[in-house]
Length: 363
Image (tube, rainbow, N blue to C red; front, side, top):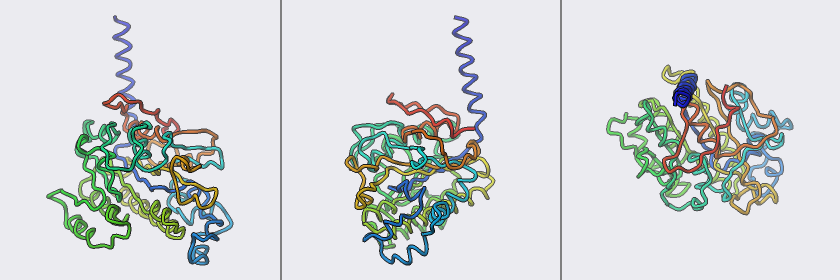
């Protein structure tokens, strides 16, 4: 009995020590829907620029093309390759054998987001329909931890996230599509955004608002309310790819890199967030590559749509830059990685499995 008590005590002590060693106090998660690893690591694709999917080819070449791969990807993602590649980590360059993949076989949005936030690929989550997710997600888990209650927020361009994060069960505030922010004490800028989003053109349809509005909501909410965990889900990269418009796909990717840069600079200038905040960027699925028409698509039958990537920057992450070690990691490992950034062990209330944390993320 004494041995059991000692083992238990040592276990509690180790867990407490683990939690205390973490410097991360806050977290920002950003997803770029359907953003291919090919452009992330190679920059603009010359074959795509020369194809029927690119209008204004000379303009696109001038903005995004150079012979050097390293320079080319910096043209498209300057913050990712000038800042995160220097001070953080980037995973998923399959050209180097560093593979990051989906575990779910469906390879589209709802199953991808379920895998990211619940830590496992559920065969029941095989739709983009408005079905409430039965699985516990890491955001609701964090929202129940001491000091995090009411400090977890989501803004998304696509309308489906209230179901993906099951707001009816989780109680998480999730502002998706054209939903208005409900805070009665919201500042004038947030109240203006509530109004503005209904008057801007609905270029993406009535279920998906412009990423600019999602970005502005997120930025202003962070300024006023200082959340501990903020999830921002952009969508336009996926929309432009489905539309077959490679120019706009590149433009939206470059725009979202700029949004992330601005957010990072803003929080690093804020004493509440400075040097104690981790930034994690990823996508929900990949896209096809061969034949060339498959770049527009993803799904169970699209080869390459399982290939994903992620980047991370923060006080607990060594500045290893682009990971070049041949290995394979999975999206299902991100939920526990997120949890362990705060020193917590994510265990789902329903008892479903949770992928192991990615150890190389931590110092």
